[in-house]
Every structure is written in C-alpha cells, then in structure tokens.
Length: 114
Length: 110
Image 1 (cartoon, each protein chain N blue to C red):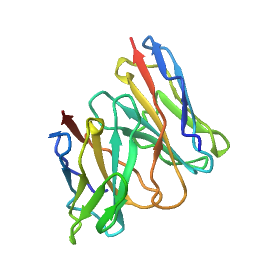
Image 2: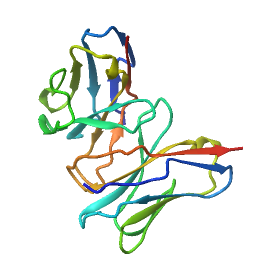
Image 3: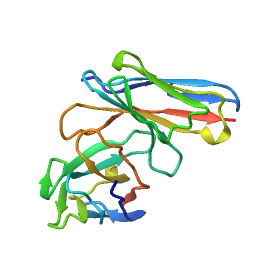
Image 4: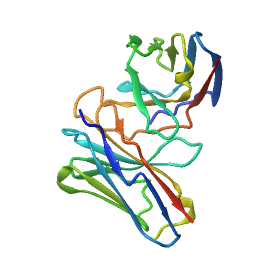
C-alpha cells in the first residue's frame, strides 16, 4: 500500500514570497491533516479535512495560509506571503474512516524562509 | 480536550525495558489513548492505542489503570533504533482535533 506522498521535500524561499505544498493521502482515507512542526516541538495541527470539508482550521493563520482539498483527495497548503517564523517542517497525514483512526504521516516538506 | 503531560526526556541502555508515563487527569469517558513515535526527519508513526487495561502489539504494550488518568507505554528490550520522540495523545475515536505535546525524547545508549 502506498503511503502519504508529499512534495516538494525541501523548499527555500525569501520572506514575502509565496510557496505551495502538495499532499496525496492514502487511497480511501477520508480525513486529511496538515501540521506545522517547528524544530524541537511537537506537530501543531493547522487544518483538518473530512473528505473535502473543513473540520477544524482554528490554528491556521488565515491572513497568510490557505488550504484546499480537491474532490476530497489531494490537498494543497499555500503560504502567501511567507515570514521568517514560517520556517518549519510541514507534515501531511491521513486517517481511515474506521477505528482506531490512526494517522499515517508523509515525509514532510522542510521549508526555510530567509 | 484532555491535556497530557510527559517527561521531556529519558535515557536508557540497549536491552533494557523502557516505560514512558503520560498523565491525562481530565480524560473524558469516550477518549482513547494513542502513542506515536517520531524519528528525526520523518513524520510520526502510530505505535499503539488503547482505552483501558492493557493492550499489546508486536512493538509495545500500553498499560492503562482503572481510573484512566495516566497511561504507560512499555518498550521491551530497546535497541539503538528505538531512539526517537514519543508522543501521547488523548481524544475520542473518530473525528477529533489531535493535539501533540512536546513528547518524550528517548535516547538509547549502547
């Protein structure tokens, strides 16, 4: 079974530029998550989708971050404009519809904002 | 959502059993306890989940006392490759807002 795919794996941009990350979840997984993980901290949930609807985006900085899930499958996370404090690893995860609802994580995208 | 408290770090040696305890005093009746493992430069990986008493799989055991206010992840005979950060999450099964804390950084020494 293929895992969660993410691209790109690494990205370096200058502040005030824009960037987009892509995620392809495991087939059949209805729930998709985007996390931000700053070095030395646990993953912080940015947004959670159930199919193509948003379950929670309370921690998403909506003035600069946006996310969508097309047709309830792939998802993109965009940052515009980027700030220095956005430097982090962005993790995508998906989970199946039944118990135990464990999350399967992708390899992440390491973003460096200079 | 139930808040969790774990030790920041632990040290062990190869071949020893490691027990990592997580406190979750305000766990709700419908909450499950889930543990994840994260290696450097990788996303977290599901280890085990339980509701009460004891759960065991090929990787670890999870002990949950009757009051469910804490849980203990037990890793038998650790090896160097078990060096990782371990996260305890508490929440209801199904759709809920997962919250990762800082986790416990386990270092296994030769």
